[in-house]
Image 1 (cartoon, helix red, strand yellow):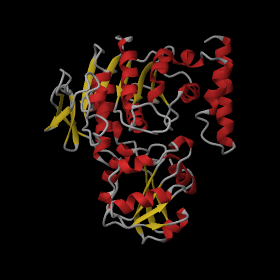
Image 2: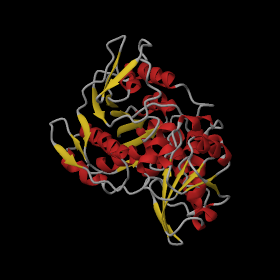
Image 3: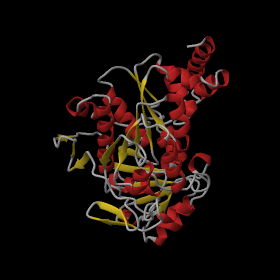
Length: 406
């Protein structure tokens, strides 16, 4: 690397280490931010010479990135932004911290994908899903799909691994010559009833979907979640044992296996590595406190709340909602979520916008109790499992109360 880039890399590592030592965070943003101030081309320099996979979508990015990094680990050391810092400063910090590695797997925010493609020149990109998120500041779903479609058309050399069950993803990848399709299901469908190509209605039946006004339809997937395993392109079925809950994580595992295959890794090599992932930046972590086994689930938008209800056991459940900048300030999306699956459980609510959540639960006839603190929540439930479902900053607040579990 040029001397300037070498200096910027060293300063980035030092800043990140100081941040961790001072207890100000994991350093996954500040290190990259300072490094890029010194050398604006630092990410490009750090990416050079590595075989890189990018993972993007509205939900599941962090978990899929972690699973993919585990799978690629059979080939050698892998750099990755495992704590979810998914903008260029986070990518820069992760690569600087890792030093010289032959491989990298990077989670990428949907809006930054075009920029990161240009700066890292990836071998593979995994496209997971697109749905509404942070309504007060994020682009509309169709706008992101158009941005991706335009960008990917300029890079025919990149192999795409894409979700065949999401019409927005299929359309976004439609101009790419090399696409491997995976099927993980699509529980949340409310953002893909209108065809992004012609505006006609999308019809669905028996796992298939098609546009009623143009040729856009679900492609045949090569990787398919079936029962508690994954079918590969040869038709072989592989049992996937995960420590992570929910069928959605089997879909994330299928994505990881498809990306690994693009690097020449056979499923028999990759599958055993997936079971090593127990939690992801605190997500799915289980902590014992005062006789309660507390499990943390992150849910930040309607689609992810729907999946969280599927993951959570039928046990006392704490719901926590904030509306700080990382969450988005608009909580109207709560009315897009059906909370009726929570009926019959002991429900506690907390967070800065607990009253918004209270109104929503009243509409769904879900009884609840408002608690002021996390400690009060623990004291309010009997010994045993306590499920915690929270949006981003509420999740981080609770994680801090539990000493920033990973």
